[in-house]
Image (cartoon, chains in turn blue, yellow):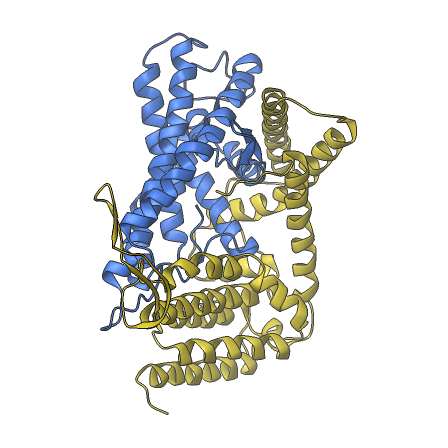
Length: 231
Length: 293
């Protein structure tokens, strides 16, 4: 889902930076207000954790494997605004240092994976789990569905961003200048992969890690998965 | 998100090792006495970003090819081995862009002036009224040109980004970001994240290696998922404990909640020369786009 540079026009990149900027601004403000000084190293280390688990190949039904992002997991554990910051940092390190995702396309990648994914995932989880007791079936289903819907919402956004390129940016004779695939090709291509594989991987990782969090409660989690705050 | 049929442990191990190796090699070239290594990271960041935007805005194949040649020239005068540079740039992203650009050369995706016909159906095909395939499948001029622009642009962008990274030490890059008023807290978090990524890469590598050395025969998918979930949870637990330990270590060294950048950057005559040269290249890009020269 990481869009490299060259796939999106500079104006699309600028629009996506502008769309992400208010979220980054609020995230920094909220994190400063709500997180203690102790959380600065913790959030950094959890970002590193997120980076590494993105490299894990999760076996999914069908005999194949897929990568997870862990965005909904981070949103459930630390809150969606902390997830915005944490995943944005991961995406910045990935694009600048590891070449995964473009530098100009960073705004778009952050919008999809660090904003849409954790927010959609978190609110779907909240909607389904409601006030259900800790560890109830509704919570597990909420977390799994939130992860699944969140990553697919992010994939849909990626598909739309890629798909509008040939419609908006082409030469007078119709030569596409950036991603050559229109909406009718880009959206199904992105969604097919995520509806069948990556969504499942995301749900598996979220539920499995939350099961661990519930058992040992090592984190100051923001919801009823927590047994006690140990920080 | 990509999917593989290979063993998940072997695949993950390969990816983790590759990430570690990439980091080691990157550090090696950042300290060489080449041109880009000597340029002030602030000046380098701005100029390479301008080239990156130039590559994104260029519409002519000639301009994009010129920029690619320029990036190769920069690699050579920065003493980056060409073989390493080409491998680092072309491996995966531009090759992948090339593969995904192939269907776009046909009239099904990019209509236009036919260059040659690949296949003829007796009649046009319509699938459920959603997908329309013309009777004649042709490679179009617009499709070929669009694919070429797309792949070269991606290669240009990756080349410029790689040049920035392999010729700049991470801490100097962070100092440059700090000079551009990037929030100090963000820089501190970036520096810490970067540092702990390597620790976790190593831990994860050992974890997967241990798993591989203990595995004989077929493991059911459910069991694989349980193992990877346990591993992820183990890393999460370790992250949390480490976060606490690092915080206490920071407190003991006088951390007061304010981030500081220690390195003072100084621009000199070489930076001024490099900036002037970059401006010339930018003018050349603009003229090339207008079809002059």
